[in-house]
Image 1 (cartoon, rainbow over the protein chains, first blue to last red):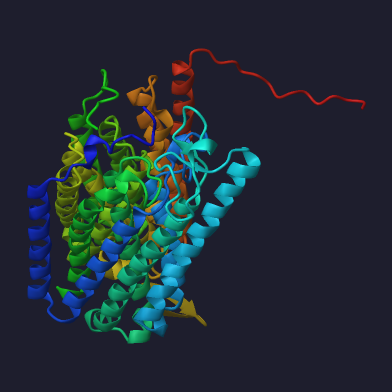
Image 2 (cartoon, rainbow over the protein chains, first blue to last red; image 1 turned 90 degrees about the horizontal axis):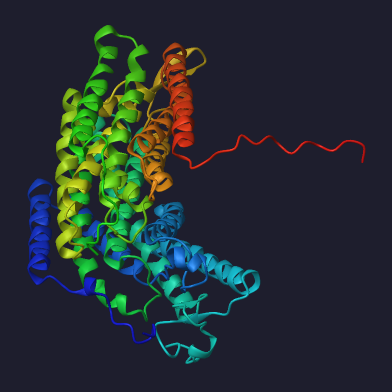
Length: 277
Length: 282
């Protein structure tokens, strides 16, 4: 069976009942937050959920090759989904945190650019190593033609492999995924930071200037924790490797959106309760 | 996706490890409360022992989960354990003396819902998933709490966010010199996350042996404890930090030598080769 004709695996099926339960859970969690801390807390939680969904959706774009890619037998970057998502997201988070006092929009886009830059550099160096180090061309195994450039893939693909290297569409997917992931991570951080800056001084009874390190560190740790939870859940959704936006597995993203929204709402609720209770 | 690749043959059953790990961790965490009762900081090293106990339990949980082909690599399990654990742990520190129990309950709730999401919404359909994610969130939360207790001598929000700094001979309170404000929590996070996922990642395969993997976990735990003990010099008195450091080094040396013995036992054949001698006169 050629890899081009390969059907999506059985794990791609949706479970409508569970999706419904997930949406209800999301609404219940938002409702609890509205009850405990209407206004500032609810706004922060909505921002956190949007950030989590961006991370979950963005991770689907990243070309993840895993162990087969390390042997040049599958396209993508030779590591796992969780590692790549964490790398792109944390690079974006650090980039966005520097711009935190320049406003929500500027900081979120800065975070996205940070993540995209990290993925662009990673994708380029991966291709350098594949082409000049291992001597293999870039070819996708999932599509006959590159959807962006229109280049045919089959003549460059070695027999018995799923494709190899990092075709142009995967590169673009990696940068897009890095942008979405970095922006999502930064959004979570900014929402929690503004909430903690507003609430922690009164809670701890210390001046606002003193509380800054605590607010930054707590918001940062919560953002990292939520980022990893979302990245691993997306990894479970993809189960293994994905080539990028042209891969059949990309169609699984609706499941991941619901999962990320519920998980972010759950984790975000506890992050908000720490100052709301 | 529900093919079980390996089965546990012999050894201690998982439930026994889970109960032993949970009880030991909680007891050790509460033993650090002796610091408050006796007004010293010398009992901080019990936090490190809680870390080792929790990690041993957690690495066996990872073994149970990753025996099913989840297709995402073993490290992702360690990441989700601590990603969900840190949220429960930070929230629980608000509850003073009840913090370890609250961390356990909150982490169990978070882990259970994450397990439901993975199994049903994401259609993983792995029998051990819900229980394993619940256990791992608890392990993550209690491990971080153990590190916190070891570095600061306590596990309350006030203790973790305030420290003292001496300026011109005067001692003033500062939020910057603290477990959370100083960012030590980030180091503790990764020390634990790497220690929990490494043992199964290193020992998996047809030659997997339970005692060898658990000994490697203890070794990784004590190695993390050495680093945490060095960092604790910044926050607690030098005497207490030295006690932690000595306990960590002794524990590490013992578990490392035991692990080497077990590795030699399980190896098909091993050769105690010497280094290539340096040639003289050329």
